[in-house]
View 1 (cartoon, rainbow, N blue to C red):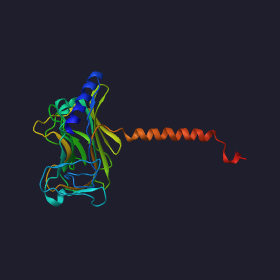
View 2 (view 1 turned 120 degrees about the vertical axis):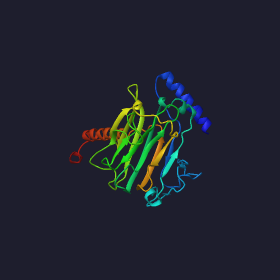
View 3 (view 1 turned 135 degrees about the horizontal axis):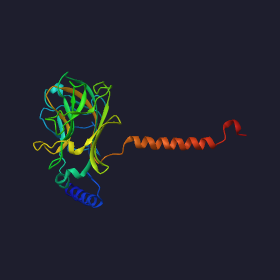
View 4 (view 1 turned 60 degrees about the horizontal axis):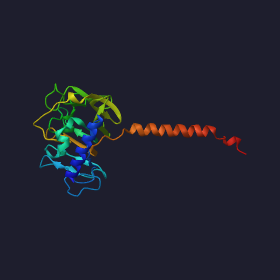
Amino acid sequence: MHHHASLLSALALALAAASGQAALVTDAFRYNGSYTPTSASPPAGQSTWSYGTAALAVVPNNPAAGIALFADSRTDARIQMNHLYGDAAFIAAPAAYEWEYAITFKVNSFVSTGQPFLVGVRDEGGNGKAVIFSMSVSAGNSLYFTNAAGNGDLGLDKLYSGTTILNDGLFHTIRIVKQEIGGVMKVTGSVDGTQTFQANYSTFQDDSGMTNGFGFFGSTPSMYNLQIDDLYFGAPVPEPAGLALAGLGLAALLRRRGARSPSPSRLP
C-alpha cells in the first residue's frame, strides 16, 4: 500500500513539475478521539499512530464520545502521539509538496509557565523544514513557530495572539497549511477559521536531529491536561469560508427569486 502511494506521489510530483505547480501529499492521516491511537485496527477513515513515551495516558471517548483526554498532568510523562510520513518522493523533495495540518483541542489546565505542548510537522525529512508551533503560557497564551532565527520550539513570530486566549475552556481549531501562493511556497496559520499568520516556507528551519513526522508533542512532563477532538494531516482541505460564500450566494439567489414571486397579499 505504501509502495503504491509512493508511486502515486512520484507521479504527482512529476506532473506538478511539468506544469510548474506544487504537488499534493497523497496520503491522509486522522485521529478522531474515539479509539486508542496505537490500535492496529482503527475505525474506518482513521489511522494507527505511534507513542513517543511508554507512560502515555490518552483516554479515548473521555469525557464524551469522539473526544480523547490527553492527561499529561496526571501521568508525569511527556505525551507524544505522532506518525511518520515515509513517502520516498516526499522525503526526497519536501519543499515541492503542499499539505495541511489541523487539530481541534480544548485545554483543561496547564501550569502557569513554559511551553506545555507543540503541534504541527516536527520535520519533513530530507532537506525539508520543521513547521511546528509551541503553546507559550508565559507569552500571553500564544502559539509561536520555530524559524531560522529561533532555537528549539520557541521562535519569534506568533501564530496566534488575540483577545480570546486558547485556554478559555472552549474548543479551538488550529490549521497550518503549506501551499504555493503566487509562485512562492507559504505557510498559513488560522485559528477557528480566521487567518492569523503567514510566512514564507523558507523562513522555517530544518533540524536534522528531528524525525520526519507530525502529530502532537508534549514538551515537558506534568505540563497540561487537555482534550483532542480531531487531528488531521494530508492534502489541503478547502477553507470552510468558501462553502460559506457559496451558501451566501445561494441564499442571495433564493432571495432574488423570492422578490420576483407574488407576495401572499397579492395571491388570489
